Image (cartoon, rainbow, N blue to C red; front, side, top):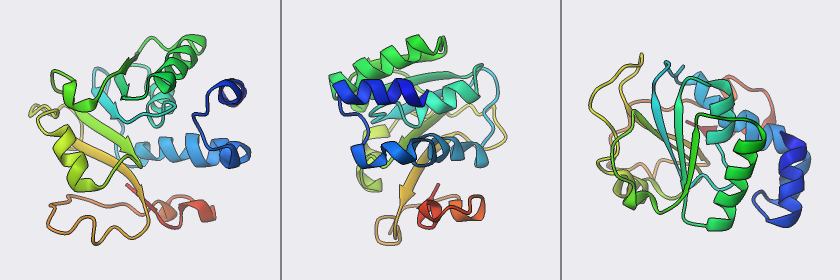
Length: 179
């Protein structure tokens, strides 16, 4: 998977060039940390908002082949890469679409995001996208991979649970990362 992204990254910049040496740590493992929060059941539907190069959606789609992932981004060249990567990896559970999240019709069990925007804006963008019927061990909702001090960003927002990823990973990259 790493070689595939490195090839595409030479044509279309989908991950920071300074992160290519730490691709698996900073992109793949970070994306897969969602599995520390929830183990998606077969048939679950997940919307990945602002997927960029396919993170966290592509690694999660590999880990959960019986889950449907809808990856969206407003930047067409990034979605082109996501479609090619999903195709080359043979992922049948990924739909990638060049569209703004606000334009997506329907609901999903979960909406995931990774460093997309501030929480108030993300809540606005994803409003009405989460199904009220839950089938997983945790209630349906928004799962965000965030970093840094989130106190001010989350002020006035009801957050059910925050996990410090440093609890699960010893690498210094995860010291300020949260779900």
